[in-house]
Image (cartoon, rainbow, N blue to C red):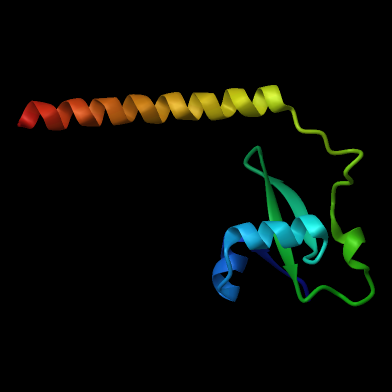
Length: 99
């Protein structure tokens, strides 16, 4: 039986930093599965992997097939930043108006 945990949950469960979990997934120490949920790709750590499959074959995307669209990723992050900045500015303006 395979259990899937997000990187954050795995780090919390094993009392290690998220950075160390990411390092372990990148080096192949931890088997991972990438799934798309709500339009976002989420990496899961496979806990209790079946012994019939080698660790390296558990990745659902191969490095040759997986390409990051950096321009789209930047635009998405920039859009999210602008939304948060606008909310922050409105909050700041409302708190300064109370003083």
